[in-house]
Length: 246
Image 1 (spheres, rainbow, N blue to C red):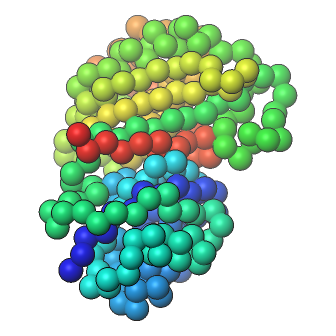
Image 2 (cartoon, rainbow, N blue to C red):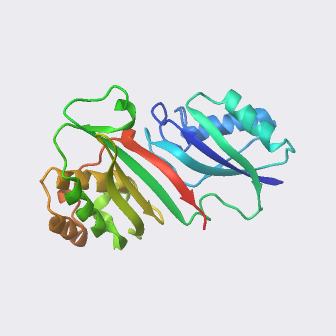
């Protein structure tokens, strides 16, 4: 058996997330269907991150096992020929038998994009969250630093889906303009709770609008107060941007 690693990117708009779901279009469903067709065997893939419905990926990592001896370049080209146009395979390589895309990942990085100007952009509308009111980016960055390190993130996830251990470690977080009125919030952590990134972003937006102070954000985290944290922002602005294995 060969263990094959793929690095992918996809536009999540038309999918109900990565994870396979009965009778619904998903990234995993499309990938497994296409791989099974090419390799003529039943293929099941493992992913580094199960992105939610509508979330995009610039660098998703998966692995699967196969008895096929198909050359990797041929496999990659066949996948890109048969997969829907909003899913693409960037890299394909054979890896050690022990490699597991999820378990071996040491960190995951997400980027969230906000279009902050007085009118919406027809070009970025599908890939960013539009906010017309001016945001105080310096205040957002000050508040963002409070999330660095190891914390209980109960206040920043779906309350019906809190795991037994809601403690996570954020290694990097930043808020900055990347192009004219386009703001990017980047967060790198060991792993994330369900909708944690989008809730942190919603909280930072409240800071940027002057509705929360950095001190109040620290209090929300300490008291695990989901009601005072920001809303979960739309999925369309969120990208899985990197998976690290170092």
